[in-house]
Length: 230
Image (cartoon, rainbow, N blue to C red; front, side, top):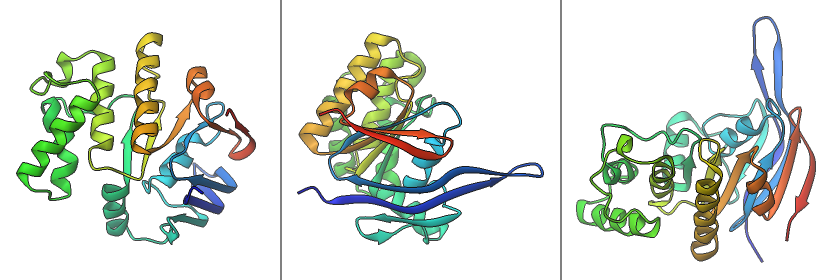
């Protein structure tokens, strides 16, 4: 029996615009289990990224509660949220978000530096994860010297090097060609199966929607449908 990793209860997110309020999420009730390979899909403006940001503790709900392994995170202060993110969450972004002046290994190591992990352990962890994602031999290169697919592999390595409970991937294939996107998705699926890392995507990509074991459809800030592909 898989454990409940994330539970959202009656979650709402309201943004104050110019003279009006925008309800980005409306009464979201959602449970993500450990080891899931799931995707949130829907048209632009449906609330996908907002939902991912709330789960990743990058933002706080206007109302409702979010629990992570049974602990409420929606009431944590900013310092507590930062500690929580560093320990439990891995992020993969559409635009890779690598630091261009750092090498491949330095980009991946940065997360471990924030966690104050010792030098020898950091070196070993970085070496192991870069080999796992197929980047052995490219450790000293800088992001501009890499292809889009290689940069996204660096981003994946950075997201998993600290062994998070969940990786949140926001449109991770959007800036990749079809074949590279397939290979990146195959890599993430392999990590999901072999390492039991939970993956939750926000996506427009039909390939991710097809490969996700569970598809959560959003429209106008509400979950309108859920599908299981397996």
